[in-house]
Length: 109
Picture 1 (cartoon, rainbow, N blue to C red):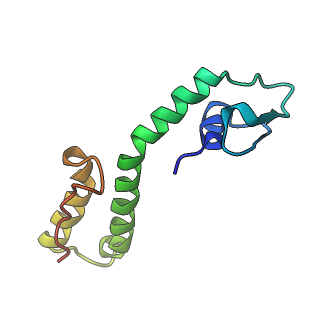
Picture 2 (picture 1 turned 135 degrees about the horizontal axis):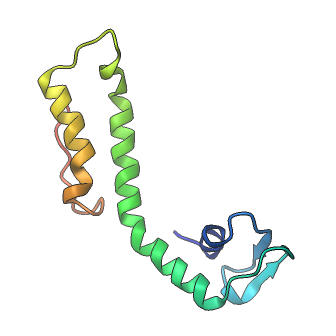
């Protein structure tokens, strides 16, 4: 779940603040040198992050699967054509799918 705090951190990465009850109306701003974003700015960023979340989760899972096969690409090994194709299919998965809900994963050789 994307939070108000995450949206604020995206807008003001070095800001100091607290959010009570996950409400835009309950922000305590502690950064005197960084202007506090408006409610509209926070809401817009929150909506952007929520919209991007399915693709972010897809990339996270894809990256995990790629990491599990990184050893195949070690300099003292030669990948098979199937291994190379699998890793490329994982890299290309976001060209076809946008969330974990509809993805069809390639079969690991």
